[in-house]
Amino acid sequence: MPRHDLQSSDITPESVYVDRRRFLAAAGLAGAGVLAAGTLARAAFAAGRPGQQKSLGTPYGLQPNDTPTPEEDVTSYNNFYEFGTGKDDPAANAQDFKTRPWTVKVEGMVAKPGDYQLEDFLKPSRMEDRIYRMRCVEAWSMVIPWRGIPLADVIKRAQPTSQAKFVEFTTLLDPKRMPGQRYPVLDWPYNEGLRLDEALHPLTLLATGVYGKDLPPQNGAPLRLVVPWKYGFKGIKSIVRIRLTDRMPRTSWALANPGEYGFYANVNPAVDHPRWSQATERRIGSFRRLQTLPFNGYADQVASLYSGMDLVRNY
Ligand SMILES: Nc1nc2c(c(=O)[nH]1)N[C@H]1C(S)=C(S)[C@@H](COP(=O)(O)O)O[C@H]1N2
Ligand SMILES: [Mo]
Image (cartoon, rainbow, N blue to C red; front, side):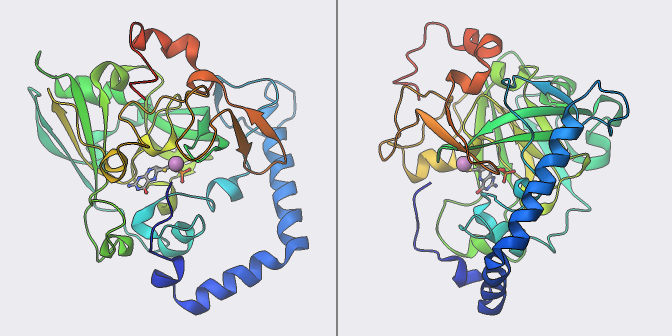
């Protein structure tokens, strides 16, 4: 993501900012914590061995050396510009973000539009724990155990009309509760979209949890999108509106910089970002740099959605 003029110190009280850096500078402690968490994650992931702790979920599209990124990293290294543009801003600034009650509007080209309370909207019986590889456009990646419901469940219940071709998602707009929205770093509220067939794909999740717990605010509580074959910015957080439409939705990053962030945002190691290579990625929480895979390793499942499309032009 481009650097903008908003500095984390603009919205983080100086004392908190300094304390946090001092805390992180206690390298011995911080390092040990991360290693311990990594070891635990690996143990939990080694499913099937007798006597192991309970599994983090079903792995989807993982490569042989993929292990879940330590929970500490998943919940402290975030992009959520509504709470600041630094990676450690959301964990610090979103702590008191209230996510109950929460209404999600489903509208547009559907037979059954409505205002839904979160509880009515999600069927607990359809909740699943799934471990996905995730890849940010900034060339870092994580392996994350999400909890969620297939987006297709929710969309099908609303009964899209035959004209519906796209799904648009919108984040809460409330500068009082989301202090980053007081700065013009993006065209608020954050907006994203998928083609209807991408939205209905069984890998696409509406996530409510991570690491077996409710999402913490910094990861997009109470409800966010997870699309593992696309760059992370597609994974819009704190969703309040889902709208079925016949037009390609406007998306915040494409509005901010159309030459750098396209609508499709499929992970494509062959198409460099104008300012950096997309051929490799830095795996957060480990020292490895990895080759980036087409569709982030999900090509077998999703490449057919794009057959006949020029994915260099439709980036
Ligand atoms: N509303 C909103 N959603 C957002 C963002 C944001 O700034 N605002 N950042 C996106 C980007 S760039 C990434 S990489 C992912 C990060 O999700 P994570 O913090 O759970 O890893 O959230 C995405 N969703
Ligand atoms: Mo990202």
